[in-house]
Each structure stands twice: as C-alpha cells, then as structure tokens.
Image (spheres, rainbow, N blue to C red):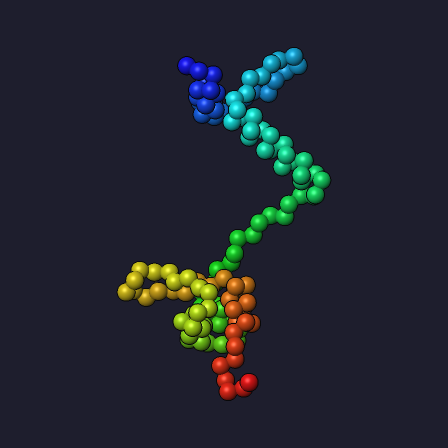
Length: 121
C-alpha cells in the first residue's frame, strides 16, 4: 500500500478525538483531525480579535390571522396578498385545507415595495 493510500485511509478511520497529551507525550493525529483542530483554533482566534459572534436567529413564521392583526387588516386580505405574490409558505396536503405561514420581515418588505392598487398615481 502506498503512503498516499495510508493517509487517505487514516483520514477516514479515526473519528474520535485523541486524548489530551500529558507533558512530553507525542500525539499522532490524522489529517482530518488536524484540519478539524485547526478550524476550531482559527475560529477561536477570529472570535478573540473581532469579538464574539451574535447568535443566529431563526425566522419566526406566523399564520395569516396573526399577520392580519400585525397589519390591521383581515385574514382574507392577507390571503389575497399571498395570491398576488407576497412571500409565504402553504402548509397542508394538496386538496385539503391549507394554512399560510408567513415570515414577517419578508412580508413587511413586500408590502412596503408593493405599488398602491388604488387609482392614485
């Protein structure tokens, strides 16, 4: 077996983290473990220099009724806006009653960008 094949096999074979070395102990790391360790250390160094990263928030999805209360309109108006192209997701099986799920920041941006539909110019 060639040296290149040995490295590739070792890269996949070791998954568990190696034990912490004591003073004077030599630790053998696979290429994959070394890469993972370097990534962690680089991320820590960047966090120290730039400050801690804020936690990533997942979007909050609300239904048509809550969106209607937010905008001061009826849920039928929200469904009409969705039919007109407002960003939304439909939850439920086709042919059955489906519920709308709306991410408020995207929906607000769409409403702000929408042209008025009245005769005013």
